[in-house]
Image 1 (cartoon, rainbow, N blue to C red):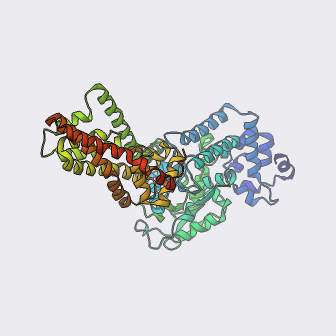
Image 2 (tube, helix red, strand yellow):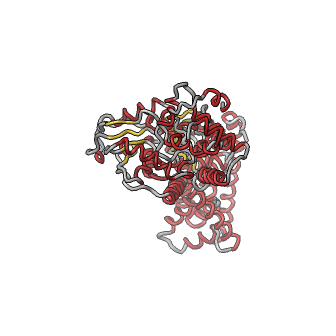
Image 3 (cartoon, helix red, strand yellow):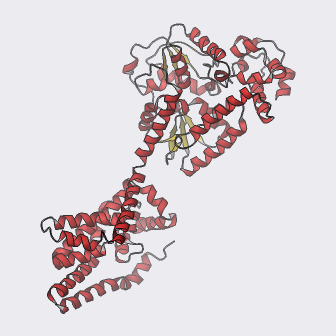
Amino acid sequence: MIEEFLKDCVSCGICREICPFLSEYGTPDLIISKNPETAFLCTNCKACDLVCPNSLSPSEALHETKYKQIKENNLSENIKTVLNSANGFAMRGHKFPFAYYQSSETVFWPGCALQGTRPDLVKKITKMLKIGLVLDCCFDPLFQNGDLDAVKSASERIKKRLNKYGIKHIILGCTNCKKIFSLYMPEIKTEHILEALPEIKSKPKHYIELKDAYLHHPCPSFRFAYIRELANKHIKGFVSIASQTSHPMCCGLGGATHALSEKLSDQYTEKIISDTKKSPIITYCMGCKNKYLKKGKDAYHILELITDSKPLKQPVSASRKWLNRLLLSIGQRLLKSRKFILAAIILIAIISTTYLRKSGYFSPELLLDFIRHYKILAPALFILIYTIGPSIFIPSLPLTLGAGFLWGPFWGVIFSIIGATLGASVPFLLARYIIGSTIKERFSYARWKWLKEKVEHHGWKAVAFTRIIPIFPYPVLNYLFGITPIPFLHYLWSTFVFMLPACIAYVAFGSSMSELILKGNIKGVIIGIIIATIAMMLPFAFKTFIKKVFPEKNE
């Protein structure tokens, strides 16, 4: 590529008229052959390609020159520092706590500048489109500086993450991200945000006075003509465009220009501001907007218009951007991870309960002894304990036996079946609406998929059979049913009905123990044992019938 370019370039100098970098340092062929390290000042805007009379690509030759020097490690300390800084920026955004992936088939990928400058817009757009969110860096800073191997490696990691979270469709909020995905991850379905957002039907209230604007198209948009067309289409109904960029014009942040030469970077910015005259700037790159704001120019991001959000009037510092990104990432984890927080609470409760029981400070027996002294509140407290118990894996059998012991066969059954049904409902609802993905991760895919298929084929009968013959422990079943498609009401009544026989048996046995201990009635104990034995033998009576419906359980 480089050799062919040097052979065909005639040093006409036409490209120097359009580019501050080339105007300052000479024609591309001379830079490549005489002072190749200067290529790192190139912003990669590709304006030179559009004006080359021989249809060459000076930008690609300069970009190849950067890559070659990195490959050969032929770099000055100054360039190494800049490249390390770019790598540090990308890697920081690529790792915890800044990186965040949400499990969703379609997600919004805002890009570094947007999430750092306007995190509120990121959340607003995600809510508007009703899709998931991914916070990560596409490694374009390294691409612009020619470190293509690093970009390729990062792209492979990104693809693995997308696959892990089941992401198949990405809506990109950054045109540079669109460029990277098209070059390194073309197999992934992507859209630019301007494709996904609906057209504005009414004039945004924040922009009533906005007119005769200058529409600045970010450099990478000149790779995608349709994106520039969409930008015009979105704002034509309420903003009059005085003029717009007809060829790539970098704001001064491209490549390593802003890090190596602030003076040259500002020349790019001033060139655009000069072209705008007194018109406000509308762009769809948050990095560009921030650069214009730093120069005191009235600038708007097109997403501020489309979402009718109050425009940002002051530039955002680098430290503030990182803080915004951190808070956005943490906020999403807390918002979308209520399931993990609740799971942690449940885990802590289980560990605490186990410890207290082993230490002798807590047991179902002690609880029953306690509630016996509060005759009015005792049933309500008992039901509350029974409701919470299964969710944190407290054994319910002692509670059921205790109900019979304390309240006898009639009221014992009433209180126990109410508590048992509510206790089965709480984990079901938790799994269905809050911690479903955690439950799927906790238990094998084959196990819950098997149960899901049985529910799809047999409906409430699956609940009935598993209540009669507990294939899994009840607390586990309660959670697993929550991630199956069974309607809650069907689950509720079938749980109530088909737990009732066992509940009656165990309450009767608990009541008979009360008869023995308190009254010395041996006959009552015998009756209780007989009833309990019948209840325990019941699954064997149903075994043949159950196998017809549930032939095999896939572990």
